[in-house]
Length: 464
Image: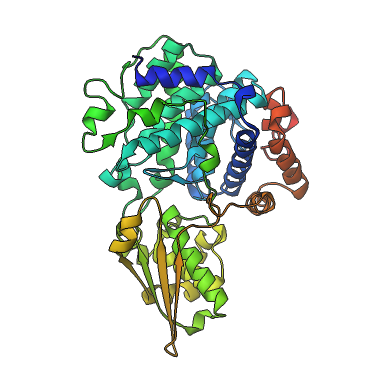
């Protein structure tokens, strides 16, 4: 029997664009558009500026472009910062069955090599589908998810990113197996990056695993070997993570026959995924009952044990950084009540000092519900009860957040989200051209032409 690494490598190399059903192709385009919009919204964030400065100091071969900035850097560094751009505002896609993940974090592992090699748009789409299929399968294979044991989902990304990069770079099957072994034995990530007071590492964990995969693919291409059975071998993933039940079949059975990408969700709010149902319920309760923030005396949020623990600990009632605020359930609820929505601008430094929001924080109580926990992770229910100053109570239950497959965003909503995100970086004319280019990416003979649309006017990349 083939090793799991070899089965995944064979799938990644053998999949062709012509095998992809039309709904799969369309979903890949939608996810690419959403990801690029998220990246363009993040270009001036502090962690992006710091990373950009770091990469400038590092130097290196000019192989692939940095989104918006237009500078070229080497493949692994381009994959890292472009992935961080996509991830930085916490607004990109979400898939959560057993483990949560944001598969779009891996898109730059295809994008940078595709630009470097002059690959076609069809090849880019196919590589993106590979990324989603394998990342989402890994999230289904562990029960309970590794996040429940204190590990971050970047620990899964390290197994997928080398396969995505390796495919576009033209590795052989043997080299792909080595690449999985190289990355998969060297980049496990502690869940602590998303616990308590959060730092820039909250957003950088998965991009670093994406970068590690590109590095591993390039090492393997140069002849470097890696463990051949990194999943099922002695002291491999399955043995070391023995407190988790691993389903080998979920990883390898039916590869290429049915695609999971259409089950991925989009985010309607730029916040941690478990905040979405409570925020949705709060917004609906306020709107349906025509409540104003001044009428709110108390808000009780009943959620999962993890939501109460990780998203509502003491530090989340006093957020001083964007990273802590967008992972603070009380802060997100307070913003929803005070402003009637939750937008990227609500996590800027000035917004974190908004008195209308801060005054609501002590009124919000978050508790873990055993009934809600019993449904998790299949249903991520939230119950929100709002008590008014005159003694009325309004209760709202929400099981599925807007943007998830059960409540999908329309094409128009997705395009509006893109424009709202990208308007700080590109003119309306450039944005409209980019929307059309992305939704027709399979018509491009070379991704290099497409990349010229992703950079600001006046850079060398935009004049190619």
